[in-house]
Length: 146
Image 1 (cartoon, rainbow, N blue to C red):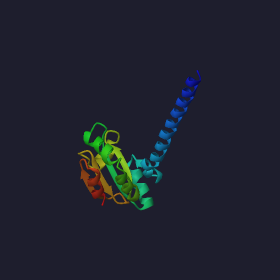
Image 2: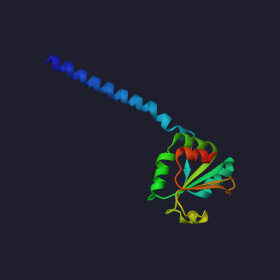
Image 3: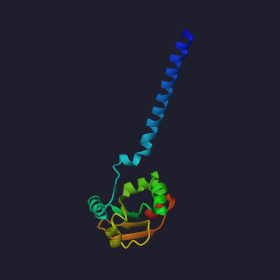
Image 4: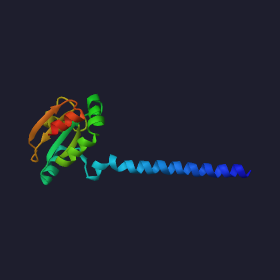
């Protein structure tokens, strides 16, 4: 009977130690994943809101036009726009907006979007200075951003 109690308590303690170890490891990894968010990075969903903010901060604007049903759009979202280096470069130098062409067809029309994904760079006044159609890998995206 004493042996069962001893092993039962040891098992519970071992289980708690494993849980604490898992929690402490997860806690240390979380800040690295959210490093860009700590810089107060945000995606706007309106080109005009992004331009307004860019003029206040004297930054360029990056507009990414996409749609949920578009395979290349999903790929750029999952692979490129989640990349730490890409997000760091965007947050440092740009005000960013993602525009869903189905939710905001007038913005797509205004910017002459015929292919998605399309990435457009504007100056802080809203003048277009660059455009790239199609998927870009993280490396291509960083090169495009300059």
